[in-house]
Image (cartoon, rainbow, N blue to C red; front, side, top):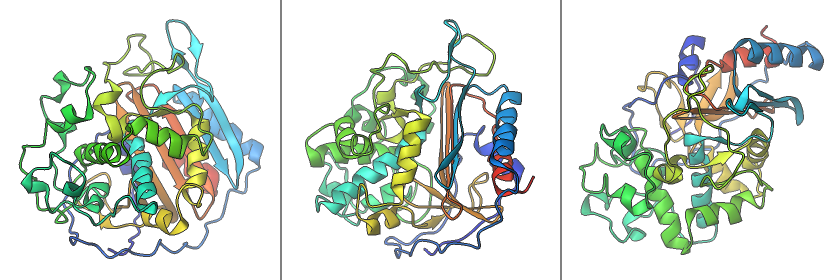
Length: 379
C-alpha cells in the first residue's frame, strides 16, 4: 500500500504517551505491493533561535514537567540536549543520567524487525513465507500467516498481552514457548492480511522464529548482529545489570511500579537501553551498517494504514515503525509503555532530527509537538 501522510492534532499525539494501544481496522491485501520509501517533503524552516536558546527552552520544558528519565535530542548530527532528570532510584537518591538504563517496552519491536531482515539478507528466510515453515508447533489456522503479516500487525493473531488474565502471569519468568501457549489455540481475530490490529503475539512468534532458524537465543542473536556492531554496550535483553533504573507509577512516589518480567515480553518488549545507545541505533537504521540498504528501505516502507485506530489515526505501519507526518515534518517512530516505564523514539529523517525520551515512570506528559516547535521554529 502506498505511503500516506497525516496531520495529527497536538492533543491526540499527547495521548500516545499516556494511553495504551487500541485496536483498529484497516484494509490490506495478503501480499501488499512494496512501496518505495516516501519521498522527502519540502523541508520546513528550522528554528531561528540559537542553539543555546533552544537548549535552554528544552531544558526548562523538561524541568517544569517534573519529568524523571533521560533525554537526547539531536539535529544535523549535533546533540542539542543530553541530560538526565529526576532519580533512577528514589530511595537511594541515585540520579538519572545519559548512561542510565531504561526498559523500552514496544520500541523493542524495531530490533526484532531488524533481526528478521538480517536473516533475510543471509537467505535464511523469506518475508512472504508461511510462519509454519519455521515453527514446528504451528497450528493449521496459521498456515496462511506470513512473516510480513507478523511484522506489520496484519496476522490476525489475538494479542496475548491484552488478555484479561495476563496480569496473573507477567511477573513470572517464562520461556517463549510458554508465552505462545497462551494464544496458539485461540481463533484468529481476522484472516491474515485482512486488517491491521496491534499484536504483541506476532512479535513473540518472530522471536521464536529467530531462535529456531539460528539455533541460538534471541538475546544472543540481537547482541551479536545488532548491538555489538553498533557498539551499543549498554543495551540488553534480560535485567542482568546493576544500573537499570527502577520504574515508578508517577513522578512523586517512592513505591516502585508493579514488576513485569522481561521474559514475558520477549521479542515484543523485553529490551532495555540508554539514550546514548538508542541514538546510535537511530543513526544506523537509514544506512547499510546492519543490512543492505534495499532491506532497510523495506523496513521503513509504509505498508498499511492504521487510520481507524483512534490516537494513531492517519499513520501507516512499516516493519516495527509507525510512519507519517507531524505538522508537515515526515516522522518515523515507535513508543513503548509498561509498568513503570515509558519510551518514545522519534526520527525526522528529512530534517535530520532525532528525539529520544526514556522515562522510569508510568505517567509521562512529554508532548513531541512542543519539542518540534522548539526545533523547527514554530515557537
